[in-house]
Length: 185
Image (cartoon, rainbow, N blue to C red):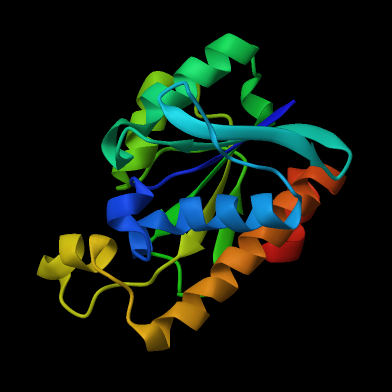
């Protein structure tokens, strides 16, 4: 069973922000695979289904970004999910808008949601997909950049990254993370 987690902030307040690329990816993946992400437990919203012949749990932590790892840990403990069956999707300022980067393992970098996930799991050996949001024009405007509303002209570019992330998840489930890395990085 795979756990696919999109990092973000509660959508009633933070929909259409760059920091919610993980949630946007889960929403699109769920829609394309007829999975309802509407069960409330593990401090998140989740749903289960089948993608590429594999049983999956799709999770959107509702803890706010900086505590995302608490939700991930709760669901991993409950379902006894192995680290190699986890895929975390999140926004990345160091990746160009519309692009993605896939990694098998590694540290959290400067992303607070990933810092929380790494703090709460006993390992950094889990897959991750970074969805590029690019850099703000002014470095001191980072918070407004990641949680501010996305301008209309930028939405289509960011949507390309979400679409690539969905394709990458399906490729990971079908062929493994190494092949997905070769095809998407």
